[in-house]
Length: 298
Image (cartoon, rainbow, N blue to C red; front, side, top):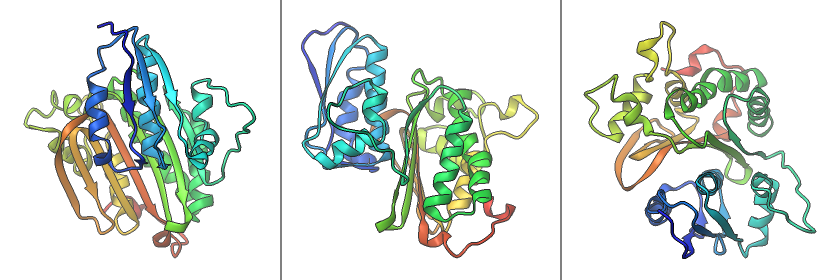
């Protein structure tokens, strides 16, 4: 569908990690999915703060429309600190947007925005080093968390999500809140569509997330002798009493709080893909000098 009239997609002033702030935006974006050779304007003028999920979502939406031959315009934020943060995170470099008279300064508190089309060992090392530096997590434990669990979660994108954009990843440490936040987002077919052929009893997106997390399954596990699908299960186990974890897949919303209590609900508008948001409580990590294999689950 070709539309020549510019379409405006406005980001909320609080572009944090809360999916419920984006419902209106998601509805408007979903209506643009079949547009080609159109003009899409991303209105970021009112953004007062933005967190990893917000950066990933903005970047994925922009890349999707560029990929589909649309002309993308960005109305930048009026907030200079947000603008500088996006610059330092590599957002403008990702889309070759020139920023005159402003210098990018990579931050030790961040893992810069990256679109992955496959596993990138160097980038995963950056995440492990970030966890070690900002969370005082022993480097070996940080490397295990990345290689045992996070790598599996990323592999899921390339194994079964069929995401045309790959996935976007970014992370930020919030030392005043004693929290580390990392987000992974794809625009793939979602957990329900990928698992349904192998687990036909799954009825909705929430059930699909529960299946993927609580039982450690994947769409390839039944096809391979080696165990697959343990990434989300391991992360869930690691974060009990150490942080929280949120997963959105189409209309499914799943959240595990610090104590391990799980809350789920169906969204009124789908995120057409899957997002995993991790929140590590720095204060809950500080007293742990060594972690054995028992931290990766029950």
